[in-house]
Image 1 (cartoon, rainbow, N blue to C red):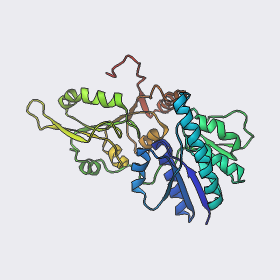
Image 2: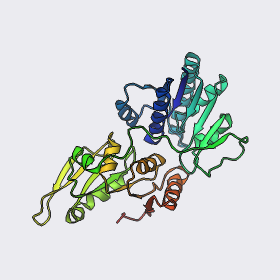
Image 3: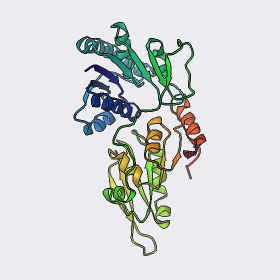
Image 4: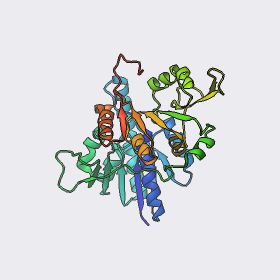
Length: 320
């Protein structure tokens, strides 16, 4: 049995594959400690995994704004001290980082203590943390065809995104009944990732009358802090009312995507991997302000494989 540390906090796109990797290691008799952030989305997602070990690590996102930069420096310093103590206490066989602001401190601490470190990037454009820390890694796992300059031969390996065991295609009728939807009607799912997408939420609310007229049910995951849960029943021309469900967070992703006839969502690597695993037809709308415009690159590659249609939202567009 070996001990592993997995740094994966900050967003669902980092945490979900970290959980998937931990599930695989534990199933093989190993132990895994997952480092997460103190954000609400992390606390909410880990509730389903009481058998895994999660430890919050100090950290804050990088920014050049003076107040935010000071917060980043202080939190990363605290995170580094925390990481040195954790590595000394556990002495893991390896440390794996999935990027984001929780990764830097533990990777540097591991390198200083002589622990092998590996990095995983699922997006088609590697993030700042992966680019910066790759020089410390024995292995850097990237999507097929993606390279990072300056690394020794053999360091980069092609790899997909680990997906949690629970994410798999379910019978559509069963999924609809579990979610309170009518399997005889079409279901449109709005899925803005772990943070939600305000523009998609607003579009869904605006188009409710037209969806009801077309006899289409709506299930919209709005994101934590973007409104309370609610269920609307919308009648049209004397027909039985059509359901429109808005919830802040969904921890039944496989059920939701299995019920969907179509999903409209963002183009994060984690979301795309779940669309693929659940075989759900998708329209993806890349987040225009994503770092290095990586969601556009993800969407273009996914569309080229025939997996989705892509809508590139202009700043002045209303997503009609």
